[in-house]
Image (tube, rainbow, N blue to C red; front, side, top):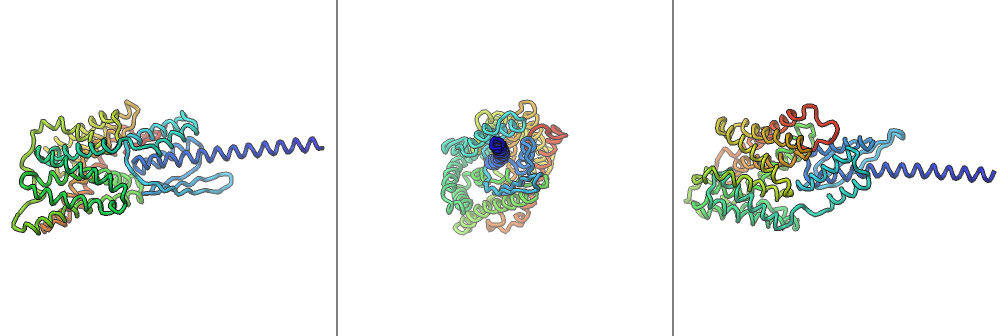
Length: 437
């Protein structure tokens, strides 16, 4: 009887150990899904694609769960079919954009969905992405600000070479102040207005030697919420209503912050120079030779890429896709006019088509080249130019239309990008995650 009791105790202990090991394995798989979601949020993936990626990986790991990505928060609910219970995790996670680390996160998610990584290895790789340093340090990021501001002035606003180097100086100042604002929360609260007011005043002081529209817009081009606007409208189109509405309202308010600062600076200048009549957002008269576009477009794209964390091997597809999108945008604008909604949608469709074909051929992330092209189209710039008239004291009635201008451009880009996805992936990507726009 004693031997039988010992045998029973041993079997019970073994059974308990097996249950404990199974529970530990389930918790490890659940933790991996949460880490993957945090990694994708912190590197800048669109919310509707993050949820789909978590769903795909969850099915691969045989975890029953539902996922919602909200601004600043990930809600994950894991269910247990056998016990009819559920467990909900609320994970605070701020959103940023680092294209280099985003592609690393996508590769990890792809390998998990394919079953090519074990749990421990995948968890360690995701920890390295989440806790690792940004792709570029301070000095390279500042150089990216200088390049993007300098070359956007002649590229999009018909600026001269003088506008180019003045915009580069302002870009340097904006980059340094952005770095400071990230470390001083109190300064970050008024960053947009503190930066744009002196830019407007100093640029008007240099008039007529520089074009105000080119310099002022190029100086804050990194701050323009073109990517945020496009992502928010795409999230709304994908029926991700809460995240889309919050990001849309934030992007529109950010446009108003920037426009208020520029308009406030213009009002200060008019107060001191009431006799000077200046059309602050009029078209620039002195532009560079259009053939320079072949040089300054790649340099501007690389500048944007460095600021947003693109690694050197990602520059070539970003430049190629932005060139395709810009070329289509340029020639369609000649036929339909730059104010037509057809123009940005045609450019977005072209860059989305090229980006998805690149991804299908190379098996790399389509988000990278498409991101480069989307930033180059800069949908937020037109909204800022329209909204400035609300605050610059010019009594121009056109400023009230800025919301419709911004939304029209964002909707056009959304249509083009979604149509490109439909053409290249008509049935979706069934076997793995689709992390793109």
